[in-house]
Image 1: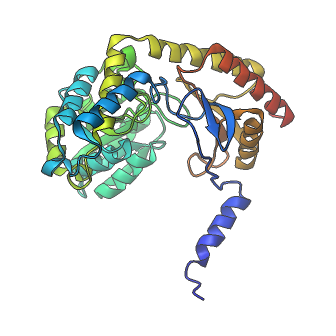
Image 2 (image 1 turned 90 degrees about the horizontal axis):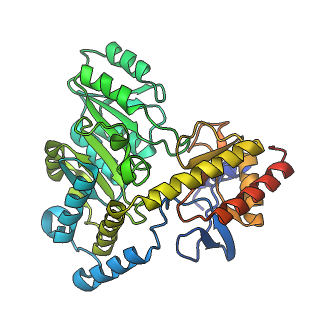
Image 3 (image 1 turned 30 degrees about the vertical axis):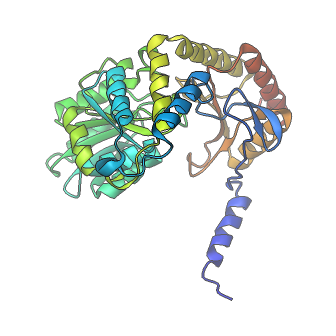
Length: 393
């Protein structure tokens, strides 16, 4: 019997022993404030469904109407026969919503990063990347072949120092940062980073995956939050979080977008996003343009939950957004905490290495506009009970 794959089982066993094995739970219900998970009704503190749109009647109706008109799949990549008028309508609408010159959509936010970074820089170039940037930025940077220089997290002064250090050693320079950091919930100092890029003639790219629908006026994102319209070359986004659907987007300067239509590999070599997904996303934009109600409720819920958790003695880290990490330290404790929460009726997953650094394991709570005050109070009481049982508070 072959032994060539035995190493995989050994690695899996090691993950289990270290408390780092990812046990994936299964949902039997639509996304919402409450879920049916592994046969149990639980309060949902896990999903990126910030505005509660993933199961909203208006988005469901838009998707159903698109199926009747366009069918299910586009049947081709965008550059051959997969571009439908609904795709170009979404790109026009999201560009208008974000106040940029143009936009191009992809199958996911991950794909948007994989498409963009290698199209902008190559082996003669350098990328200055925040040390806590998302995995898709890291992978896109590696694919580009450019030299990757990490700067201290959310530190524009360190970025400036790194830029000076590598001055004259590259053809083109690209600075990349997340806008909202998905694990800690803190915000990049994009205004200070822009000062560095503008002073050194560097391209600036921000991944706004957790900022769209959350930050800025009516959810227009991190660039709007800092009033940097026209100053950021590339904004990466996703429709799988606040918009409640799926898909990615690159928004920004028209030249960049046109180049990606010619050289963005996931655009050229992977099928277009399905029409019902596109239609649902457009309806999400309609709702955000009509009212700030959902965004306002999201922030009100986040402020309330975070204040109560701190009052109870929990450490919520450096969060400035509805992303609320409950810092616990070691992965086994975080996993035990998550299991206890689930038994008590709260679905909130443990996050440990390699998603976050060793010793920084946590429960990450994702607050939503779909949560009522009663939902939050129920969740807070359960956190209090588990926290006391495990000696965290």
